[in-house]
Length: 192
Image: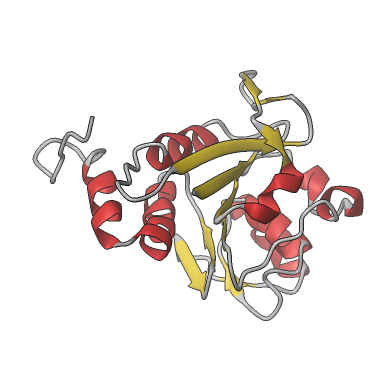
């Protein structure tokens, strides 16, 4: 079974959780099972707009996931320097695809996953990420290094999810999922 872990916390940006959630759940595999889970430190986390979201498990489960997707939002500012939070993750970029949306890159940097790498993030986090020793690619919406990627700008989630899918389940599945959300006349297909 392939598993996707979307990491959620209080004060997450809604679209940076719900858009990847929807896209990852459009994957249909014939030969194996596919599971998408919302993981947090509490049973429920609240978005920046006040939406309460029930979790499927604890962030410690991310160590077993094939894809680990860090969401973003103001809540990252309390977490990226919190050793108690960061020490719950035991991630391995040799066997896992690990990525972040916008300010989720701060958590990747806090985990040491961006050491010696460049990255992108939301503009309000550029300076913080640079202060952590990361070279920020300010004009890039997607930056990849091996099995690690960072994306900036909420709609960059489409490209980030596409990158994750190509790395884990191949181009054909990726193309099918992305085509299913494109505007009519731009390749849209129905997969349901």
